[in-house]
Amino acid sequence: MKIVVLGAGAVGLTIAAKLSRVADVHAVTRARHANAVQERGFLMTGIWGAGTYRFSCSEDLPDGWRDADYYIVTAKSTDTEAICRQFADAIRGRETVSLQNGIGNEEIIARFTDRVIAGMIITGFEWRGDASVHVSVEASPMILGRFPSGKDDAVDALAALMREAGIRAEATAGIRTDVWSKTLYNCALNPLGALMNVPYGALTDPHAWTVVAAIVREAYRVAKAEGVALPWETAEAYLEYLRTDQLPATAAHHSSMLQDIAGGRKTEIDFMNGAVAALARKHGIEAPYNTCIAELIRFRERL
Image 1 (cartoon, one colour):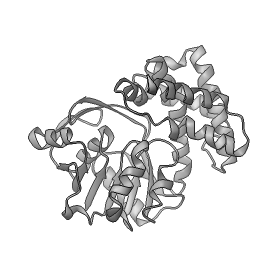
Image 2 (spheres, helix red, strand yellow):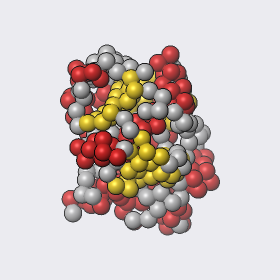
Image 3 (cartoon, helix red, strand yellow):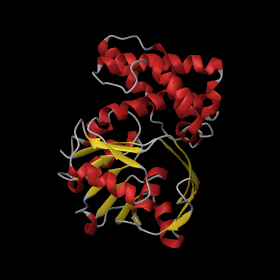
Image 4 (tube, helix red, strand yellow):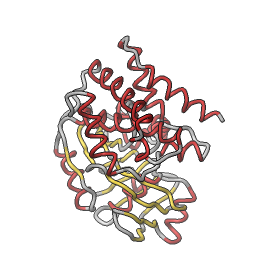
């Protein structure tokens, strides 16, 4: 099995490392990470185990890798379009997987290939240096499914490969539900944690929770208008699950959006709360909390 990971940052390099024990893997990443992997290997610590991994890695895609069985896109959502354009000849007609945050990545990828698999992963990956990542928290297994719906041999085979590599993974016929479920989690916690510079566990404070609850209720109304069936019947049911299950599992995690802002990078807000606000406008739904927090993050990006 040949796997190519495109736009490999902390998430992509870690997944590439795990898969390298059971498949042939090439990761397309920044030069400093590629150089570090070549010189001393990729370093992993945390709940997925500690170890040093060596696998093919560079800034480009060598000719020998253009027949990969799967292309896994782990780039920031803001880079999805550029990644797909850069490797359009390679991914055309190939199984291409989105393991990214937010809403809209799969639709972008679908403009370049008719074989799109969507993925959902709620796991904390934190940089500890060049080609060095600490896996801090995991709230659920990875979920994979044919986009926009369905499950087939290619999906099942990829989920099985992930499990063989030591990554908890499941296949589903209703991946849109899972993508939106993760988007609820991200919208509720990621930008607020970034703006307040606190770990997710701090957001159970009653004042912060008021904002979290309002964001989720608006997103629920938008999901319903989009025809997405969420696993929890009501926003209140999801908020209870978030408070009692997801938050305790990721309480110590710091928002990836906070890391982006601290590093002077553009965030994925337009694929999270910004996307919810845009869809709300399309359906004539009021979404003041998602609109406000998206604008605040955009303001922070400009500082």
